[in-house]
Image 1 (cartoon, rainbow, N blue to C red):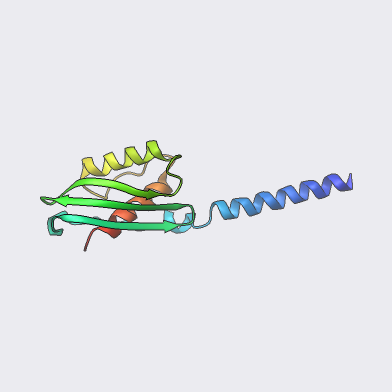
Image 2: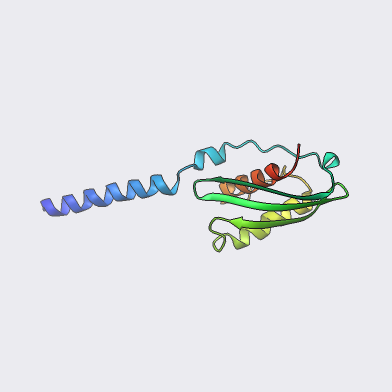
Length: 125
């Protein structure tokens, strides 16, 4: 019986450590303020930006032409294989809106914030 308690206690500790590491930085990403870039003031060109905290990270290449986001490419994404559908959806939302002021994707609000912050960091202010 005592061995079983030690094993269960060990599993609880391991689970707590895993959850702490897995969610490191989540609060920081959720709390990010995303500014809305004024594309009328951004010169035509290709801009690169990134944001990373914990397991959330993006590097993007933003092509601006004629005061519009002409192309938006994710050049690096932590866990890219898992987030393929999300990445496609959020890229389409930004391109359609021509803005960073968009709704987060349900179930992926932390990823959305990290992605939008990478775009904000790419665009000159």
